[in-house]
Structure formats: structure tokens, C-alpha cells
Image (cartoon, rainbow, N blue to C red; front, side, top):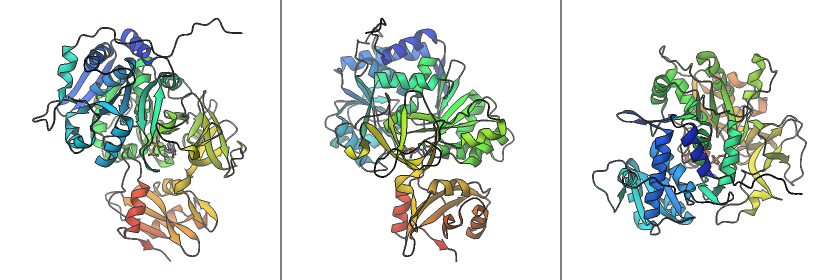
Length: 537
Ligand code: ADP
């Protein structure tokens, strides 16, 4: 029997219409070198209609790819709203990619138009000759001299009339595409649908996840090229949450300024950024983070000390989120279950999170057998659900799927209540004497030392044990902590045979384009003999 319900598709244009009407006065704040500019949701939505009119006039049609090479700012948000609503596909380009990778991705995705922030034009100029399929470049912001033919974003938006440019589409049509950052091979394209974005946004408004609502003002530190800004732009427009766009000012000090001045209630970003904010706040007595009801840290493991430090020093709760480009990204959020006493909440916050309604999860062993969700059995996480990808754009990767489930490459346990604990990424685990050592757990433990700013652990080949851990450490400014001291410090917290004998002290740990520890780069430095390694007896 069919239901009696109407067959109304879930389309992004209806998120835009909803925000434009219900939350017309809500504001989007953008940091600029000369101060903060702001615009209402009504204005942003109207400008999105004008942008759609301009793109239509340029010949953009259904399914055409319109790419953005932009920081977190209002114009980028306008493209987020306009491009999918008009039936084209928004392709967010990673502003930190090397020129070669950028050219590869633009050609692979068959981008027809690129909207680019003025400050990023030099990056495009370097590959302009290698991307012949791009018909138009639209520049947001003033430039002295264009190195190739460009159109002016602000002029296009003001010259075109708003009108209704939002056609009827299928909810399963492509809306947004995003390439994985390629830490595990060639970048691969993931294509989100209107439906997947709708459901992911709804899930993000749930009180069991991050509960974005019209009471929130959200500081969006996660770059808008990373997994569609973790869905936050669409969720904000759906729920009426204001947004603060930090542009390219992503270091601890300017972020603290923004938090003090604009009083966000929530903030989203990777743990390395929050570590930097903690460092910047360290010696200051004028820091007031009391407006924050929570920080969502995700994209990499969140160490316990960071959660404790935000709570103890600033009264702010940190929630951890787990996800991937392939999963839209939110799959799990570490909201402690009801009834847990305040002193035990941390035991949940250090986990990757409890799986949200809509996503199915299982763990499997190396042969694909499903393991028990008992908090003990350890295997690879596999996922199914309406916002989990079923394939990649234009490439086959059968090894990343099993019977319709996405294989995540993340290893860990699942407890009977659906909380994920990540031990490590499969490729980062260290095999010592036939047993696995979790690089992630070692890092989190070492970073608990006051004299350590950052720590990353990679494997080094070992004749006797096959592999042993090497811990690469960045000290805090006045710290002189030694390898012996760190060895003694972590001794009580991890198994004896986990304790690294190899240590290296460096000025900075290389980061990926989204700010995670770049272990591939570290391994390369080690192979090239560029890491000075101290081996304890
Ligand atoms: P990349 O592979 O380049 O890092 P993604 O941003 O898609 O690209 O990263 C997804 C991966 O990030 C996950 O597979 C997982 O290894 C890691 N990750 C994300 N969130 C967490 C978390 N809360 N704890 C540990 N690892 C995480």
C-alpha cells in the first residue's frame, strides 16, 4: 500500500526559501582586513538569486559544474545557495592544494566556471593554461591587474535582477561535489545530492547531535572547501543559525578576537586549530569564551587534555564529531548520554561519538566477517545510509566498498550503545612484534604533557619488531622537556611495549590542507633523513 503523503522532493532551494523567509533578519558576519562586514539572510538569499541569474546569462545549465576557490566568506555562501538551487553543481576547490592537483581536479570534475577570491587569483594563474574547459572566471574582490580574462563578482551580482531561478529538480540530483584531500592516493570526487544534504542538515539540527538552531551563532572555522563546510551552511540556513566567516584568518589570535567581539555560541573546526586557540589564550586574562555552548572538534582525534582544558580554563564543552568526505561528513557526535554524571561526561566526549539516526554502522574483521558491537572486538568501521557515498565520481574503487557498505579505513570498537572508539587509521597503525600500537592514542597521551604543543607518531622500520613508533614533538615556547621526561610521563598511561624509544623534536609538524597532521609528509622527511631522531636506550 502507498502512503497518503505528498511526494515533495527535498531540494536545497527550499532550504534557501525557508531561511530567506523565516530567518530574514539573521546575520552572516565576514572578517575582512578592514573589519567585520555583515549581511542578513534575506540579503544573502537575494544575492544568491542574482548570482543564479548571472550564471544563467553566462550559459550555465543544469548539471554544469560551477567551482569555487574561496575562503570562508559571504560570497562563498551565496554560491553555496545559488548553484545547487539553479540545478547546477557546486564544486568546492581546496585552496591549499598544489597547482598540479588543482588542475587535475578541475579537469576531472569538468568545471565550466570558477568563482575565485581575488587573493587566490595568482594560484589559478599558474594553471590557467592547463584548464581549457573552464569558460569563465569570476573574481570576488578587487584586483590590480587580471592575468587573464575575468568577470567581476560584485558587478555581476548587482547588475542582475533576483527573480525566481530555482527550477523543479529531482531530490537525488547532484548538488555539490567535493574531492577527498588525497592523503590516501589520488583525490577522488564525492557527489552529494539535494536529498543527502537535506537529511544531513536535519540530522545536524537534532538535539542528539550538534543541535544547531535559531539560538545559535556559529563560528565556521572549518574551511568551506572541506566536506561542504561540514554541512554547516545549509544547516544554518535551515535552522536560522547565524554564521561567522573567518575568511583566511584561521590562527589562534584572530579567532580569539572574533570570539570576543562577535560572541559565537558554537564553533566548528579541526583539533589542531582548537589547540592553537588554547595556546593563544594561554597567558591572557582578557579572554572570555563564555558565549560558547560548545565547540565541535572533528576530522581527527580530539585529545582528552584539550577537552579538559577548554572546560577547566574557559568553561566550554567540546563535542567530538566523526566523519569523512565520503560521509557528508557527520556520522557520529560524542554527546554524552542522559543521566551520565558530570565527572563521567569526559569518558564519552573522548570517544569519536554515537552514530546519528539514519546511518547504519558495523565493524568487520580482515575477512569481512561482522564483529560484535561489544566495545571490545576491534575491526574496520563500515557504513550505509542516505548521506554515505555509494561510489566515486568517474573512477572505480571497488576495494573501498563491501556489499553496498562503505569501508572507512578507520579501525576501532563499537559499544552496545553505538559509540565509536577509533583506535587508528588502518594505515597509521604501527605493527610491533605482531601486535598493533595506536599512533593516535600515543599522540593524545604525549600531548597531555604541559611542555608539549603537538605530537605526531609514525612507524619506523625495525629489524627485530618489524616496526616501532617514532614520536615527533613540538615543544611549547618555554619548554625544554626531554625524550626521557616524556617517556617517564607516558609510562603509567600506556602498555610498556608501546612506549616509543625514538623521539624527534621539531619546530612544526607538517599539516594537510585542512590542518590535520600530515603523516605522509612526516614519513617522507624521515626517509629523506631530514628528521633528527634521538633513540633512547
Ligand atoms: P583525509 O583522508 O584527507 O583526512 P577526510 O577529511 O575525509 O580526508 O578525513 C576523514 C578521516 O578523518 C576519517 O577516516 C578519520 O580517519 C579521520 N577522523 C575524522 N574524525 C575523527 C575523529 N573524531 N577521531 C579520529 N579520527 C577522525
